[in-house]
Length: 405
Ligand SMILES: *Cc1c(COP(=O)(O)O)cnc(C)c1O
Image 1 (cartoon, rainbow, N blue to C red):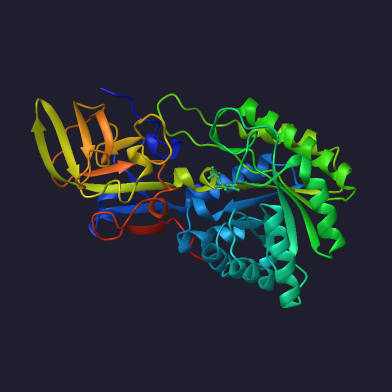
Image 2: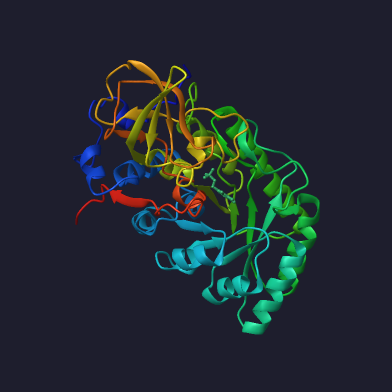
């Protein structure tokens, strides 16, 4: 028997899993597998953050966490900005937010992407000096003053981070020591210099480490400001707030983070700050629902074979950047309160042993037709999975819980 992650608080007390007034079985009737996103959970997340974040800190959504357009459309009015990382995401974001509230990061932006962003008036977070030169040239070609920020490769990293993005050689951002010279070059060339983007890591549940990293990030921005001799209009301090996925994971203390951040930026009053969050806003709002197709025994182990799998939910199978495979929060949707009767593995339909959604977990007895729910599935799900692998139909996505006006 292996442990599972914690079911998010809003669902943990339910017996029959119910989202926006309908049971999981009802949502599943129109076809499985599906990703069900509960917008009420997203809205509550944003509202909670707003009560703790200082007023001088804007809230951005990192679109790559979940680019499902109905979700982006509903979320866009609740956040101050959208952060994108491709021309495709830029086009999506532009349908729901003015360009002035969109920033475009990521290495290897092609000339057509630089031009699309400059033409639209979005901010480019420059990843290298070479990209800076291409952006300046693109602005000249178009006769448009480019809005340019410099992404900094910080000389520290976010401790306890699932994905470290700083403190080492990196494809992301310009090494901190070379940033002042680049800022001087951009302003000398007449660009609209928008400030700094400093992203030190992702998926951290360590409140103290997040506080420490944000303080170091603001201190680095201050040092770069002084060395460049130019006041950044905006400093995007990244995000990094994680969500619980696995047994033992505990939520970040956002009140403590907000309070500490307030103290740190007090001393930097001329600049606006932004945090960019992906999974923290949408991760716990998503549930992957998949139906049991077969139940089989093999060498005294029980397998529930379901219609969903790695091709739609790579992360839950432990194959999206995890070092060790651990179980996501999982339940039988119609019998959540049941403490469990048997040890089973939940496997998908793909012909690879990697296609395992839950490994030796204790669940109430389930059979053909039952719906299995995998929680914490709202980020890096459908769009971060190899959907073409083995030729199954694409996954259904549904947004629930949008308030009717
Ligand atoms: C992916 C990414 C994010 C979002 O990360 P989460 O862990 O989903 O919050 C934020 N900023 C940048 C620059 C990213 O690349």
